[in-house]
Length: 230
Image (cartoon, rainbow, N blue to C red; front, side, top):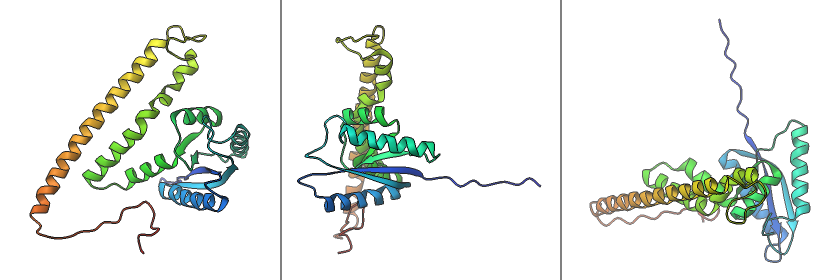
């Protein structure tokens, strides 16, 4: 008889990164990272390491300083040498397209921020048509200003696009920009369709409410249980 061996699927491993600032002391940062670890666990990731840095504010290009980014990079490389691959690095604050692009280029792993992680959890938990549509619309709204990072491979091949024209950009200026604009239009069209769908769902719900009489319903919404029980 043929034997079937069921292999256990390994959860993705994650590193958490947060900042300690004048507005956010070490205790508050630890609290936020505890919450971020809970969110990562909810999404199916296992946190293996935390990195924090005391600064005045986020670095506009890499969120953390160059030294701290190099420390994170070295940790990832050391883990790879020990055959313990790091799946992602999750940042406690929302990252800009520029920050994501620069961090990805340096660390060579998947980069998430708190917002993208929460949206991923919402997408995983959404059950109704209304919830799924709301989440998809939120994901597109998040993605739209960060669309440029999806085409960084064109920059690496051609040294950038546009009228500036760096070395090696010949023949690659037009296609990248055209594709970027095309993707932007597709996303905007999809967002418009989703808004129409939500309006239709809302109209249906309004009709249904009229048939239910004067019932009052209250819903508490949040991605953790903190405060809702109280």
